[in-house]
Length: 151
Image 1 (cartoon, rainbow, N blue to C red):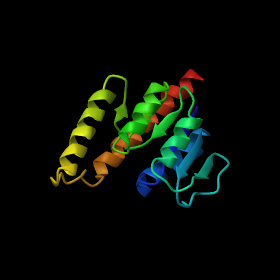
Image 2: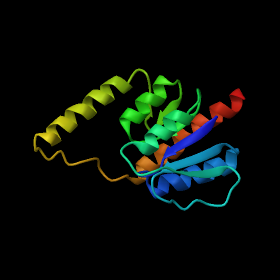
Image 3: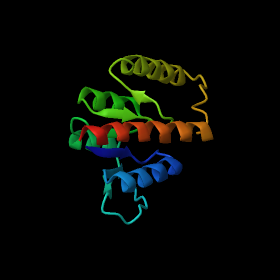
Image 4: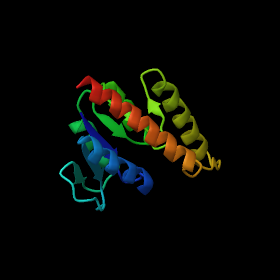
């Protein structure tokens, strides 16, 4: 299993949690972005720079993704592709996208996009809270603990 990070929009605090988890577990972590990102020196942590372009990082992740890998993303279409490939998808707030919830998430995303296109100000997601960070770290630890027991 590998962990793939849609790193362009991933909060720094979430990256830090992922860096520590990768070092602790020895699971390969790859951050994918279209601009350079600083990563710690580690044999488990990699960075993949993709060319600028709409969904370039997402497309590269999907191309390299294998069954059972974990994708960290807030991008619902990327999460849907990961779930379709029988991978796991976790957002920075600690919520897993699953076959059971991804269609409704896509519908809400599309509805909100339509509202924005019509000129309505939909605000945006709230800032990542301390509770969100803890939920993410807890869910990641539980997931990695289950994966380590199965290997």
